[in-house]
Length: 594
Image (cartoon, rainbow, N blue to C red; front, side, top):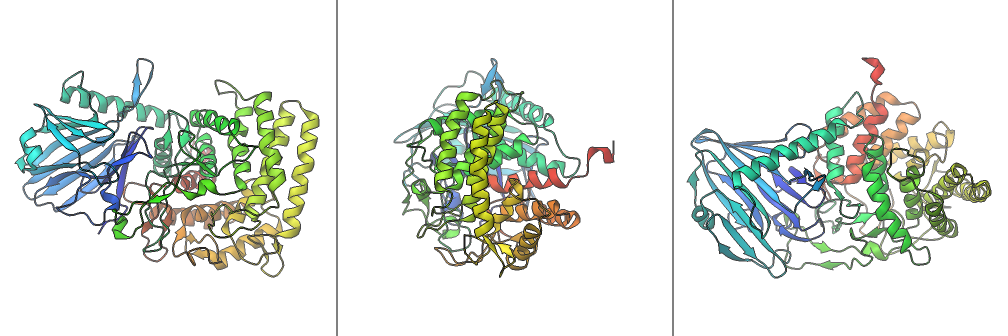
């Protein structure tokens, strides 16, 4: 049965997902939101007749292991059979070349015999147009060209072309290399190029990882999360995708199937903040450049919650009818209707995502007065809308209301503008924004506390619980030890907690009651517990959440709290952010051992 036991490789331009049997089951080119060259992940179950995959089949396969090469984004899969064992190394090249980053739209696969006389078969079955079109093949002496309607690709290899074309099994005697990418001739030999690319890619990722400011505890988990977040950045523009997949359902047959291959302003802020906490500020700098383009193009100050990675404003949602979906649980969607929504929390997320650029001396160029005045237009919009109905951060599709989480982030927008104005010496503007922030703060305190529920609730005058109010302490709106916040945490736990996991909210939405726990909510919970002094409980929850990751340390959006199975798009940046934030907050200090 298909699961999310997948490894992820990428180079900040595109990504690929590889299962435990060394099959590439998802890969979009030339970028995250492109046409999937391999889409087997959303074509139902995988069998002999399946296409849209890139498989290394070992005859008589009995067992496999998959792991990352230490401190890198290079994936290793080992396959075992009675006849022998095979190792498959997968990676997307990324390294410095001629004083700049080299990150081609290229997937490299290196196959090595480890023992015995293993018999393998290579099934390279790319498709175009979301699996609808089979490319025309043209063979050369050491390559195969795949001719599609909009792009051509080339596999260059030292594997026997006849065996590859006929998908014939053969004895693996030593090593084989396969380089899949643009329809271009390699400048060097296949083995030489693959080996050089691998060595330099490993060196790049180890150099990047070794510069991270890691906590004392849970270092491997944090490093894996950081590398994953880095891979989810689209470096050519600075955008950050929420996940690399589309339409992995939040729960079986739920209809909650969405395309997450775009940049949500909300998710991106949390990614930037998590990486900043580890000293990886270049992602923030690149994202700030992308973000300021969004701000510059804002129509009357209006911001969408989500944009394309190349600043596309229109992400028209459609269903790909010929794809059955993950485990045949469609629909498979391309595009996301959320680009049409009003979600007022985005104004706070924009300013929160940019505020550090006004203070951080490590950046090549600090943000200044001009940037501040552009941000003030965003603050004006936050103030205008803080008490107005919207779709909310959970992106309700059929109804609008005033949401506590949206008002909270509008407060955060004004509050951070106070700090930026003071830093820039603009005392008058600081007073202006302080007055607005206090007005919003009082509105939230007066209208969203429920004596009946003994908690802050989902909307002014409402009665339902929502895990997003845990962000009140996270963004500095309320003191963690405030009795109202402590009571809120306790009430939320009684109602929404499922062991270490956490549901988003208790009220039905457009699709009924959610069936699976939303991973980031569990991390918000442990953060809140740590802030109110229940540190040991928070550490226990973090350990349980880390145990729910897949075999290579990755998380999707949702977890079934009963079976522990991962659901939702994958890997989910929001979830990986939670690992970093939780570990950074709960780790013992280095002074404990130094």
